[in-house]
Length: 347
Ligand code: KG4
Ligand code: ZN
Image (cartoon, rainbow, N blue to C red; front, side, top):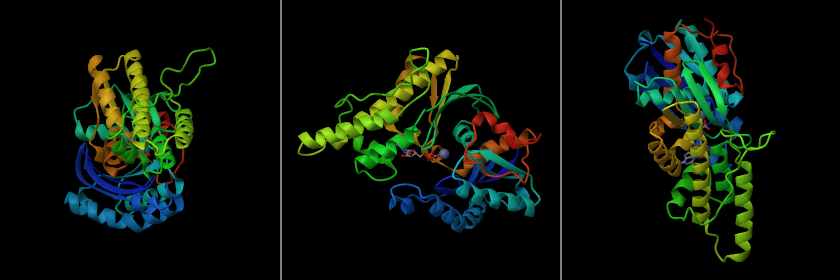
C-alpha cells in the first residue's frame, strides 16, 4: 500500500491529489475554464501562468482535505506527458522540487494512463485486461489495457479528437466554450434524427474502412455546410436539432468502433474515460450496445473523467508498488504514445 501526492497541470485544470492506492484521500481541482472562456479556447501562456499562481494553494488544500502530513507520503508524482509543455512544466517542476526537498521518490506520469486509472477509483476491484475508450479534448483512442504500463493502441482519430469536434461545432453554432456540455444540454431539446450527418470513416489503402479509427473533421465540415444552407432557407436556425443530430452521430460512431474492437479482441469490459465520457448520448448508446453483446461498460463519475490529479496519483501508486521510479532529470513532453509509458521509469 502506498500514499502518493500527485500534481496535474497538463492543460487548463490545476489539480493536486493525495491517494492511497485506489482510495482518494484528497482531490483539489481548480478549473481555469472561466478564464479561457473569453478567448473561446485554452490559451497556453495564460494556462501556465494560472498554474503557477494556483499550484501552491492547491497542494496545501490537498493536505488539509486528506488530513495527512509529509511523513505519510511515500512518493510524489506529476503528469509529464502529453500536454501543453509550458503547463506541464509547472506541475512537473513543483513535483520534482517537493520530491527533492522531502526526500521522496519521484514518478512522472503519462496523462492518458491517468485517464485509464480513473476507472479504478470507483471500481477498485477492476482487473485488466479490458478495453478503454478514451475520449477527451485531445484524444480519441481505443486502448487495449493488458497490465499496468502495458498498453496497445488499437484505434485513434486521424484528425480531430471527439471533444475537439464538440468544441468546434459548438463554436460554429455560437454555443461557447467548452462545447461538449453546451451541445449535450441543448440536445435534450432537439430531435437527434432531424438531420443525417456522415459519421466519418477512415479508408484503408487496400479498400474498405478501418474498423477502429475515427475521423471527425468531415462531420464538422458537414455541420458547417448544413448550417450555411439552413441559414439561407430558414428564418431561425434549428440549433437544438443540429446539436442533437451531431451528438448522436458522434455517439454512434464511437459506440460502433468500441464494440467491434472489444468483440474482435475478446474483451468483456469497456472502460470509458475523458471529458466526453460525460456525454449523455454516448452513455446511452454504449450502454445499450453493451447489454446486447453481454459486455460490461464502466463510466467513472464525471469528476474523475475530466482532468484531475487523483487519477494521476492512482496510476503512480500502482507503478510505485511495482518499484518503478522516474529520474529527477526527466522533462515534459508535448507528445508521447501511451505504448511508451515504461520509458518514463527506471527499474
Ligand atoms: O478530459 P478532458 O477534461 O480534458 C482533456 O484531457 O482534453 O476533456 C475535455 C473535453 C472538452 O472537449 C469538452 O467539450 C468535452 O471534453 N466534454 C464533453 C462533455 N463534457 C465535456 N463532450 C461531450 N459531452 C459532454 N457532456
Ligand atoms: Zn485529460
